[in-house]
Length: 344
Image (cartoon, rainbow, N blue to C red):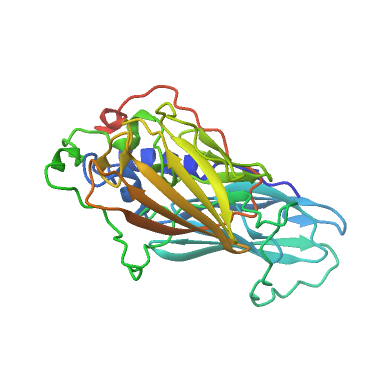
């Protein structure tokens, strides 16, 4: 069974543009992605083609939804992309249910496929998914590979954990470093308007999925937005001496039990961290752990002695997207502010 997909991130961006044009979002207010996350979800299409078949024949389910999360089709299919199609061969007359969650609640739409000469199937009650073990790589380490989800409402991942370990969960500028605080004028199109790399950990904080590919020697992270990547040696090697400053920095990794620790330095000064500019002294230590089959736990400890009073930690959980084999292509055709296009 092959699922044809449209990137959820791209689909959200399209929905955002349509909403701007319709006047549902006021340009210059809260960040556009946050505004998009408040839009009501809707199911725009769910069909079976054809709706009547002979035993042994196949049909195509097609669906599309906007502004929602956790799209799912029952019975027997499970998580799907926000928009796609799938060939199925039901053995008997079956009613398929497409479900999506949004700010306006849980939405469902049914479509019934009639299989000639059969008795309709009663949809089973949703059962708790069998708990799958954390997959292992060829070297026995936890395999972090996969495509991981984002969260439109309030940023990607789960809310920050309480500061039980005594480490701050928000940055504080040191006296005299207030100039590093990012202040945007009303006509500023925002951090992501120019499609430049977002650095670390900012690349995890946009509503687009990311993909991890792990080998015994390296961990590669591909970010769908804005089409950036990191290739991280995970054999415990040190940083090179005086690495050239780059957007994504220089990263090296090592295993501490079940957790992969990634240490990153060598950043240029062109990215932002939690609402602040930073200097080339930025230092980020990330910890990635697959706490169960479907969840990647992520923690980033950040410091810049030229800007902040001390280090702080961001903590998130990212859900595996088992229905996706890869992220999609993202291309910025031109770097411009699109807001004037929606004034009318």
